Image (cartoon, rainbow, N blue to C red; front, side, top):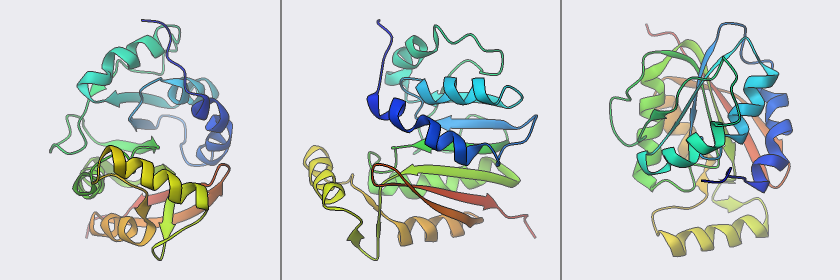
Length: 200
């Protein structure tokens, strides 16, 4: 398989890295959900050599992940993990952080709720969840292009689509996650950052 490539990943990786750098200290272990081309994780691992990165994706996507990782021989990236966000429990121990980009709008609606519940279960207290992608606010799209994107998504799968910020925030809170930041990003996207609260 030839090396996979996403122009969107290439365009946004530096902007995302700028937001991630203050969040993960040396020795942190970070799980990426939906690694696919591996462009993000290779870029982040090179920029943060003291952070240990765990790529993951659905079983059918692992050949693409492996092709993306082939030229990326950094010691702080683990072998990719087969992981379906809808299944519980996730086959991983506790982690310091979770990162995912452009996945929530592809997942089926009920899988997004499961994503937050499972993320809350594997994050250590004080760990952070970082989600990059487009969102609606109060039921309104932030741009006409995101509205068109939502139509295209629903034509592929009626249960996919651009997610409501208020709904994902509620699911995150149910999972014991506190919103730390909502960053506006280029290309009509957001970077949402949550922290896992300590259990009482």
